[in-house]
Amino acid sequence: MHGTFDWTAGYPSRRLPVFGNNVVSTSHPRAAQAGLQMLWRGGNAVDAAIAAAAVMTLVEPCSNGLGSDAFCILWDGKRLHGLNASGFAPAAWTPDYFRGKYGEDTATPPKRGWDSVTVPGAVASWVALSERFGRLPFADLLAPAIEIAEAGWLVSTNVQHKWAAAATLPDLVGQPGFSEAFLPAGRAPRVGEHFRLPGAARALRRIAETKGKALYGGEIAEALEMNARAHGGALKAADMAAYAPEWVEPISMPYRGYTVHEIPPNGQGITALMALGILSNFDLPSMAVDGVEAQHLQIEAIKLAFADVYRYVADPAAAAIPTKDMLDADYLASRARLIDPRRAQPFAPGNPVKGGTIYLAAADASGMMVSFIQSNYMGFGSGVVLPEWGLSLQNRGFGFSLNEGHPNVVAPHKRPFHTIIPGFVTKDGQPVMSFGVMGGNMQPQGHVQTLVRMLDFGQNPQAACDAPRWRFDRGMAINIEQGTDPALLAGLTALGHEAAILDDSYQDFGAGQFIWRMGDPSVEGYAAASDPRRDGQAVVG
Image (cartoon, rainbow, N blue to C red; front, side):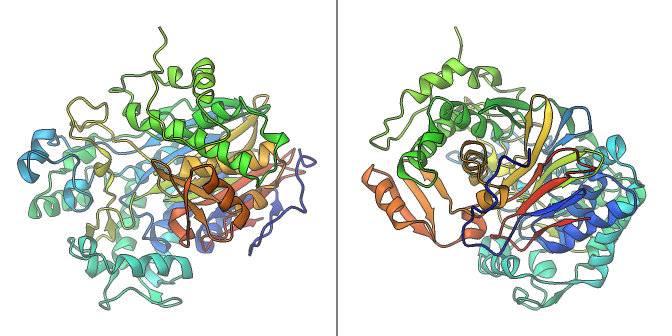
């Protein structure tokens, strides 16, 4: 496999690909190093991923925390497995619950506060992964995070930028516990400033000792219920106790001789698969990789995919359209025919009926490969924090609709539409790459753009990661990353795209980690890439 890439191709970047037999790639160095520690101690890629994920809840709190959700795709050495650890709604949540509190015209649950909090699933994912595939004791995996929570860490550059921006938002600063936990000096920490989250050390210890039971029905769950009740929320310890992550079969799409895998709905991974299925109908390799023609087709394919996803995707138990119909090759070919190579268009949903964070990857010399993502959704999530436990909570409830006719309408113990998506690539039934790109609705767009660069044009993973990106927003509007060739911007504008340069690479253009298997993992090993838009790195051992 190592002859497929141009290793000289590149874009302005602080990064180069790294090579090794054991790899951990994350958006923060402390997390990558924690994962590598587990591999040095005889653990496997799952152990490494869990240790890294636990550290990430501390060192990048703007993007995730102990109250996050998570998804995972992993290759166990023989086959792929998927884990959906997105949480569900409290038992009290109905459209009437929200309309009674916020008015009859309310379209969604609120963006912040207790009424945006669904049951967090990330910790449950760590336990489930450890029990089924881990090699080391669960408590050992959380030891690096506990040490960092107690001793503190130095705040990194990109994290500080996001943290400082959050400190200006009244809807965050006013939430229970937020300022006490994250603005103890009355401001965000500065770059390189020492910061501690001692409550998280206490929570991590109890989670380690009880294998998560303290959070799911134990004393931490009881503290959550008490705080929710005090601030008008509905989450109860019983909701926490009723929750369990779900093992799922990944969905897939063939593309250029490879197979791309995503977690099935309620997530938006299907968006990337649909866009790739649409692009299969075009001869992209004959075009220039950074040319107007190739980029225009990718933008239009993403727009078509999102039109369907936003209309039809929900918790599978409530979805009106089966996933297989949305991925049907004939249907996607019909959608591809709507694309005009000479002009940009707005697209409406089709009719598929026949007759959205931190991301990390790990791989080890035995061949196990892990693609893992966890998120609090928007920056600092709901804003609700239990400082005594260092527990910040996501705001995934904002992803529900209150429209009774919508497949994503809120209901008790229902899972909302989710943005976070881990990815995986195989070829002829064998593992090729664990990968992901974090950042809201940029995630499937990042999947498509980086995969096209690697699989259509032979760019190596770091080059594909470094290349400037675009992001479809809505209607005809797209954001273009600073550093993009002005000729591309002019060409897309001439086709009718409402294109504007945006200088905010942290959130708006995503950040990815990629681990590509080069052959026998114990001999040829892996090539790994880490996105320069974040503070992290790929490390090998």
